[in-house]
Image (cartoon, rainbow, N blue to C red; front, top):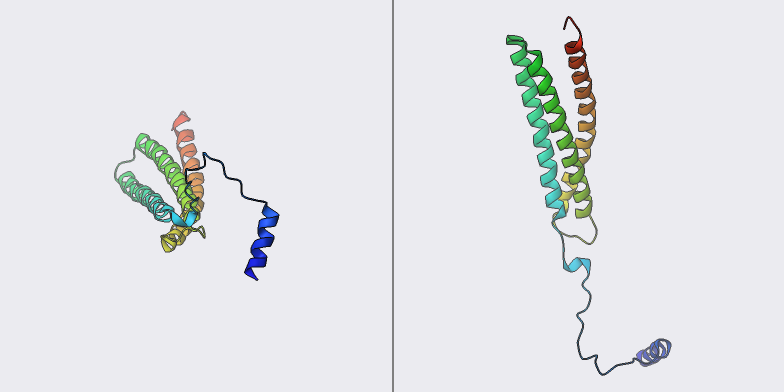
Length: 154
């Protein structure tokens, strides 16, 4: 049975042609499973960086509110809101990178760090949504501070 199958396959493919300069053995191509990637862990780290940046923004905002109760300073508040916008943008891109890398880490051909990739993917998506909402809030706050500063009485 196998001889018949080999005969059919040989007749369909035609005879194998070898040349004299074919002495070099070519390595067989490697599959993706031969080289797993650590994209899931790197994505998780990027998600934690984004979460850390959002925590820094929260802590700085709490300190700003406490300082404003003691001694109001419109200039400091204005610059802190700009700083919050910058940190929020960096956290957004870190969350985006985390989502992309964790999606790569969840590829069926990649067996490494799948649990971390799932956790990083969930965190990355939540951070993207959170940073979009926070950026809208910070932008409105910056606009309000700028309007109050530009007013003759403000």
